[in-house]
Length: 170
Image 1 (cartoon, rainbow, N blue to C red):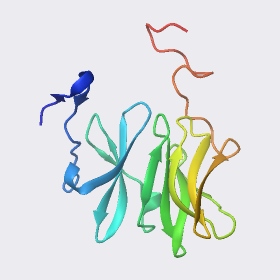
Image 2: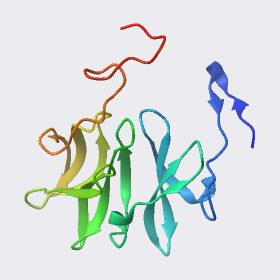
Image 3: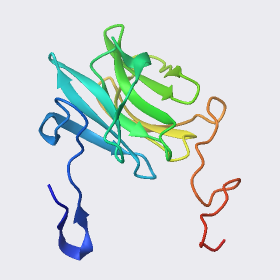
């Protein structure tokens, strides 16, 4: 498939490929890393959704061994460089929020108090905050959690401590 032009100069890129069953037809709930290099999406496998993480340049599917056996997965979200993958997993008969730190190979659960159940989430590009849609007693609301004590930042270009790209001005 070739890239095609859309209105306003937007270009559609070919669907990622990387192995059997990774076509666009079987994928849903896409999330791109801030730098656009990694694509997380869900694929239905044996009646359970499984998160797939793919390097868009090579088409290679990257392993996520810490997430095996905790399906279904839902609501993937990536930090800027893809160090952190936040998502919902099935544990103990309910959805739970976890963050996969791919640099340290750790899986960090975000404990929720009470009968609150997570529905969707969104990770900040630097990985320091997480917005979660929670349902409790039939009421839905959004809460933002600080992860600063748990996670190192996944630096966003132009942020403190990150050198600007060559040719750019401060």
